[in-house]
Amino acid sequence: MQSLDVAKLAKKRISVGDVISFKKEIKLYGLNTVCQSTKCPNIGECFKNKIATFLILGKNCTRKCSFCSVQKHKPEHLNEKESIEIAKLIKKMGLSYSVITSVTRDDLPDGGASYFVKTIFEIKKIVPQTKVEVLVPDFLGNISSVDMILNAKPDVFAHNLETVSGLYDKVRIGADYMRSLNILKHAKSFSFQVKTGIMVGLGESKEQLFKTIEDIKNANIDTLTIGQYLSPTKDHYPIIKEYTDEEFKRIEDFAVSIGIKQAIVGRYVRSSYLSEKYFKKFN
Image (cartoon, rainbow, N blue to C red):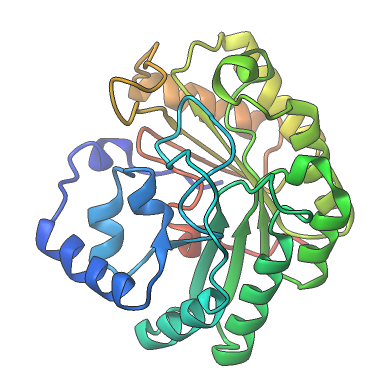
């Protein structure tokens, strides 16, 4: 089991020059990243190392999760060139690992699953040596959409639970805890490498948090990421609790003790943070 140096992460600083330089590359290709849309605290470190999580299906989300800073407006027209442009940029940057995620598009019949498939296909065609991790929405529980993506054979299938079930009505409006858990179970039943992430500090109790970790273990999910929730702005869901390094260590120890294969735990941990570093075969 691996963990991050939380003390080291707490001292990280954003290099404005590195961020601006990489932003220009992304803009040149007409692409979006979740790094920018969610105001990720790791953006300076990742952009300096030419690492990004690409955001497909536009910048506007059809859901209204109170923790998330992704724009919540009328969905945009789909960019037919998006998939190939992502693949081209990955080739140009020489990436050996890429993460593809999306806004939630409840307005689309397949939830946008076909665009995930197109993106996986283009990456594998143009840069076949690159491993692909997908971080997908819940597709309103449409398993046929999930199967479309699984049939495209990404190297890692990820879907975030985000928080404990008792907070879904406040934090993940429009989502359903069991729906998300069942998507993860379904992917794992087909022997895929499966990953999920949760945030802490939203008002969950220790009992609720540990029960969620137990649910993740019982679903046989391979990788669990846990990080501190950091409110993007004063208008978003507030931070209820700031976890200490010692508390993160106790959470990590619990995850290890019940048999989570890989738990990555710390203040600045995010679901896609250092994905390539922590990629390993479990099946």
